[in-house]
Length: 95
Image (cartoon, rainbow, N blue to C red; front, side, top):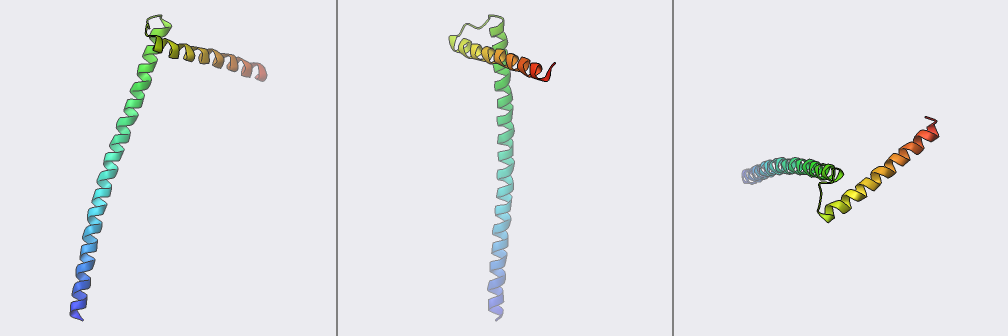
């Protein structure tokens, strides 16, 4: 009977040790994933800033690359459409 409890105690100890290791691994993985998300968000902000800079240059006729010009023209058209829609809303509201 003492042997049974000795084996049981050893198994419980092993399981607790494995659980502790897995918990540490999980915490470490979550820290790394959080860091990855932070880096990705920073990249997204920078991409947005780059896009705004290119669009500002387009508005000042400083962009020559046709692929940028096409995108900027599409943005410009949507901006104009937004203005028209905002005017419609004002008319409906009687402003």
